[in-house]
Length: 247
Image (tube, rainbow, N blue to C red; front, side, top):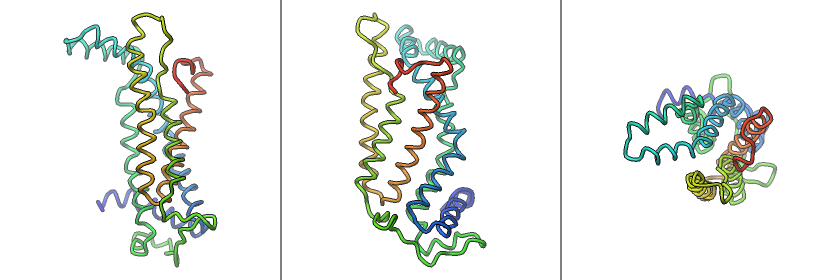
């Protein structure tokens, strides 16, 4: 394991897990608590990414119109695109950078839940965190988080569907003119992604132990709730209403 990644991300999260397990000897509940804490810490970055994605989604019809109007003139397309971003105060990298910053945390969670509870990993514990005698993978007395879970994979896919649906551009009504063509195309593409990503989430989630699928479900669910609250606040503040985007 790459040393900076281990020291900065893996070890703190791993020690947090084991520390909570000493207090709450139920792996499922520990996963819930730690996932919630991580989402709280990353809240500002996630909020920034969500707002940027929403803004870019709203600008897609105009961006497609620019490409169509200046077809073949890449320099003009680039100029008009940057002008549009500037007018609407949108940073095209705003949706990517926060996600990239969060990636090390996501990978650390993956390694913790995949390997961290093997006694061989106890060497990564800090001196003030004592190794547990054993870690029981059964949560709530009957749910084995070391086994695969179709239910949790489906729940993760459902949460992914909800989150994606809030970002999906709504197909414009018929008879609104030529300007609707680009929006129709965008709506079709978004609809494909709306169903594709949840299916992929379910397929991948079914390959992981239930502990990882539980984390994936919770992380996606908390992000979707945050996204819903941000969109609701934007609507109440006079921003785009749900009629413009399917929520």
